[in-house]
Length: 209
Image (tube, rainbow, N blue to C red):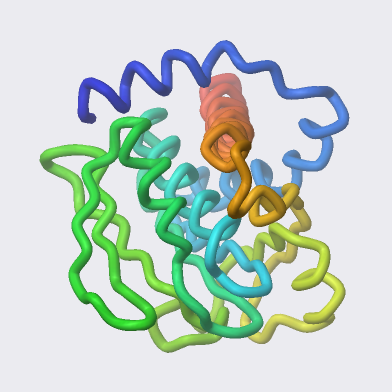
């Protein structure tokens, strides 16, 4: 894992997650744990309305934290109820936190390769609908990261489990002097909760052996 990113994770490890949020995160941790116990592939699809901010941050941080805690066979995806583009400030924020980011295409909906380690496959990010062919069609957990997507999609075809883990939209700060701070805070908040999920899974697996 890149050194600067590892330093960011050291900071994230000290960010407290409230008991209320831990309760919200528990169903996601249980899904991962049960799959890990029997060696099954663990597919997580993080879903928001536009697949531009929160769902990408969740996808990327979940993948990183699974690697950090050495939980194998975790594959993270993201999607929206519609496709737009990954918002550039997301990539900029992640780069400041230690990720290496390469833009693979430069159109209205760019494709990004988000690397967290020299030797791991990058996370491929672009905006897409949640049921895009790039994403798993069955056997996945649908993790709803915003209220609009959760309420607007009462049924997610192929989802083995549906979990609502909602975050505030950093979009509200776009164009303001608070923008950098808000995106950084949201990224750290999401990272801290994905850290807590994977830490909890690791602890439960260790205690069950």
